[in-house]
Each structure stands twice: as structure tokens, then as C-alpha cells.
Length: 80
Length: 194
Image (cartoon, rainbow over all chains, first blue to last red; front, side, top):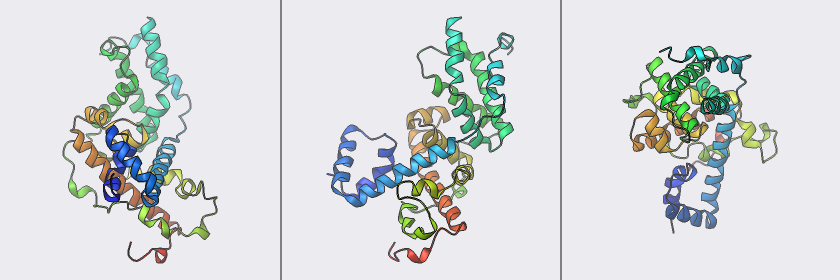
């Protein structure tokens, strides 16, 4: 069973889904029994969602998709 | 012809994601538009080397990232250690108690979501030096794995991890400073032992 410090140290890789299944099980095991670490996990998980959602919130320029489709024209082939 | 048509349709679905990331990379709408267009042109020309079934999304982001780095001479290999202040672990989490609840008129559920504006989140990312900003974008915003990011940037996985770690902490500090500037923080509420 992982302790608080180990769990917090691995929280970032846990949130990145980069831990081995064994370590994932250990982190989850600790989170279930520790409300402090569970709070840290929930906070960072929500922060990730906020950053991802807000950073991606971008209106496309007018006519942009049409201009992009123009990139696929035949005249482009072999133009290099 | 079928494969080319598939490629066109499949590539177009990633245009909004590529554009949002290009905005955070270039910090400029006209440059972001150019960058995505250049990515699509290069992708179309390199179609012969693209094998159907490989990850098209990662392939396009790789082209875009490399185009950005080459075009803007963005340094990736040797970050200046002095570029980012070292920020303590769990920086923002440890300061959440300082947010003055009376100034935040939201239900508990979406409180944190409303706490930081879209512009603040975008600015916090864009303020990061490129060596940190690009890995953070590719991971936090676009969801690529350490391995994929390491391959895109041609740096070791350990370097990806350390840049993500430092970049994320710096971003948290900036978000906190923005909230402080807006008067949402009362530091006297912080437990002194924190």
C-alpha cells in the first residue's frame, strides 16, 4: 500500500495514465482510504479538465475550413 | 483515390484541435492559421509516406509541432534552466483555502471552473517558455502520451516528464497570480503552516 508521499509523487503520472497497472492499483488503493490525497487527486483532475476545455475554446476564423480544403487540391501534388 | 479521400476527410476533423493548439503555440491568430495551413499542405504532399491505419492525429500534430519549431526557431533541445522559476509542489492546491468565497458567486460544483477565465488559462499556457509550453500543450490540451511527445520533439521521455512537471507548476502559479490580481485571494486565510 502506497503512503501519502508516494501517492502525491505519482499523482501526476497517474493523471497522465502513465503508471503501470500495479502502481495504478496501489495509488487507487491509497486514494480510497485517504481523504486528503483523494482531495488532491480530485483537485488536479478538475484542473486538468479546466485547462483542456478553456485552452481549446477557440473560434475558427471565417472561411478557414474552406481554405484548408484548398490545401488538398491536385495542383499541390508534386509542387515540392 | 479512395485512400486520398479518406485522408482528406479524416484530416479535416482535426482542424479545430490543430488550430487551438496553433493559437497557443504562435500566440497569434494569423500565424496560427498559417501554421495549420502549412501543416495540411505538408501532410498532403507527404501523403505517400503516410500509412493508412497509423495514428493520423499524432502524425498531423507531429508535422505541425516540427513546422512551428523550425519556422520560429523554437528551442527544444537545451532549455535555459533560468527560464522558469522553481515552484513548490502542489502550489495551487495548497492555496485554495485563500480564495475568498464571498467574492466567488458560484455553486460549489462549478466554482473552480468559473474561478479562472478562458483568457487566464490561455495566457498561463502562452506565458510558458516554448521548451515547456509545447510539451504542456501536447499533453494537457491534446492528450498525447509521454512516448508520443518524446518522439514528436525528439527528446528523451524523462525530459518530457520533467518539462511537464515544471511547466505545470509554473502555470499553476500564474493562475494563482491572475486570481490574486482580480482580488479573489485573501492570503490571510492561508494556514501559516502551509
